[in-house]
Length: 227
Image (tube, rainbow, N blue to C red; front, top):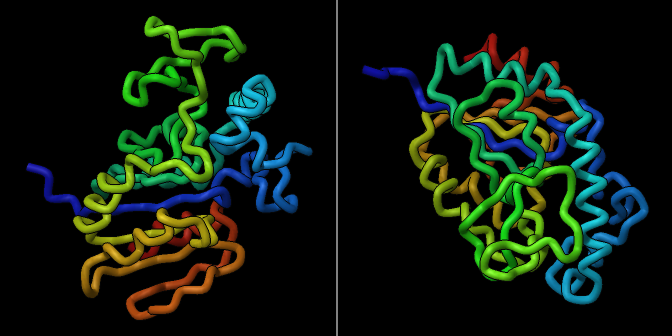
């Protein structure tokens, strides 16, 4: 029988930044010189799918070269003591590569792709996705990534996990991206809440919160001593 407490962790770009993965929010709305509105929106895809595919092929290559850091590894190690569920806003697979066994990707996973006609059937990406690469249903493959303006289909599953949390942790997210930021509202009553970030985000209701104002690698190590 599993009597471990449910530890639910919401992670954002800050946890992967220490692995060298850049975020568009650090560079004025640009990702490596690409305008986010052109490469991360349905409109951008309609206007220039080749550009979008080029951008995500580059990002995928960058992520494949990156390695999990001590924050990713530290969360994986906590599975020895807790029933750990990670909800991540990140599209990289660093949590999985670090050894975490239960990871829910709110915004998709860049190593997967799907047909433009079918949101549910996922395929692993080989080296890249090119214009003209099509699924069996005839639809062009696109990255399995939630773009700005699209629904977040995993949000309901994520909210249910948060409702069952005995401990809730937020790592490396500004809490500015909705609807993901609203997950904090699903934490039950007096459940302990921890926030790990180099710069603690603004939180209107701070009761039951413990703030660890450190980079993710150092913050997860401190978290492990507090819970």
